[in-house]
Amino acid sequence: MKLQRRNSLFPIMAALALFAMMAAFYSCDNTFHVFDDIQTEVKQVGTDIFKNATVKALGDDGTNYYAAMAKAWYRPIAGGDWKVLPIAGDADYESYSLVSDGSGAVYAVLTKSGSPAIYKGTAAGTTWTPLTLGSLDGLYLDELYFSNATLFALAHSGTGNAIKYSLHHSDGTAAFATTTLTNLATPLIGIGHDGVNYLVATSTKVYKAVAKTGPWTEDTPPGDKIFGGIAADHANDIHLSTQDGYLYTWDGAAWSAVKTIKAKQILGMLAEVETTPGSAVYRLLVAHANNGYYEYDGVAAIEGDDSGTAFGPPTSAYTTTIYGKTVLAVHSSSVASGVDEILIGLASQGSSTGYALYSNKYVSGAWSGWSAE
Image (cartoon, rainbow, N blue to C red; front, side, top):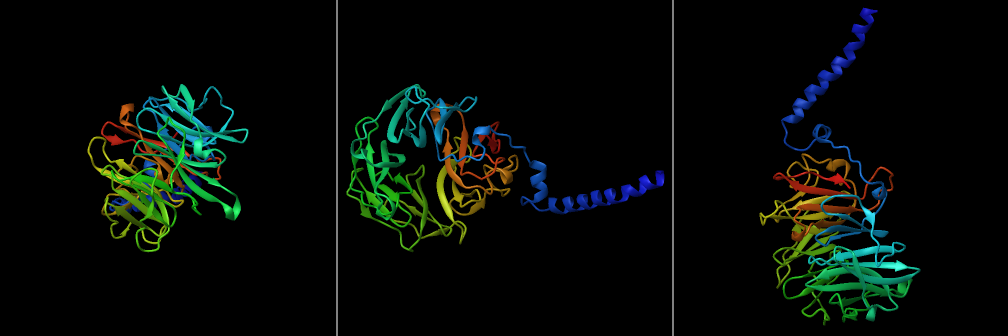
């Protein structure tokens, strides 16, 4: 019996020796390999409400975080549970878009009994005021944007091949009024302001206007690209990603030559995040189709699961959380919150074990890594 037991150990010991040899081999390389993944893996256990869900938009008012996911949800920035947000005392509604203005207000689109409405929330989400729809009346509401102290709303009329999109604006108090950007065959993918001009993009064109009302003139960069996302950075430059792996940058006067993020890769939304709070050093997070994001420092792009990232490894379980999922929204907490944190919202994974919302907090001089909310 003793002989049999000793013989049974040989395969185990051999496997352990092989594992140790391979681990030593990979440790000589500073890239992020499978054994590093195992070593730094963090079990991700989030809130059930974010399982197999889609978080389309994120924001904060200095006190609470907000997420659009069928309804509007919120939790205190200081910590706590996510709950359905009662808007004007009512939680029986649907919500698919929200924005925050960085000054303590949040705006949400909601639908109840088929009727759309836009509400402005103040006093840490305890006071909600309906905005007068004005030019939006009778239209289908698609998306809210906030840029240069202006609340914009994308809406459409018609159905099927007859759909036409239009852009509307409000100061957050007055009724919405139409801009001259109307009768678009495809929806907008975003809006940015360079300090003088508004720039908005569809998947194939970019339009520019000095006044929020227009007139809008086309100013599409050359190359016949299909665009994935548009966003302004801290210097008021406007970045425009493409669906074949490239990036254009508008400096207030002209578009740059196209820069390579990752050739032949589909790029989507993008957002600027400070690598170390207060450092004035930034990277763009550029969504990569259904495979997480790239970090771009203005020179080179780094895959989000690489060891050289600012926000991912080595302490995060990025490879099983963000990587392999479609990024829809990125939000950095406002200065007023007193907390340095990033939220990232994902599309539904079609899996009961996949979460749609993660956070990453800067604590003790380092990012904590992505954790399921």
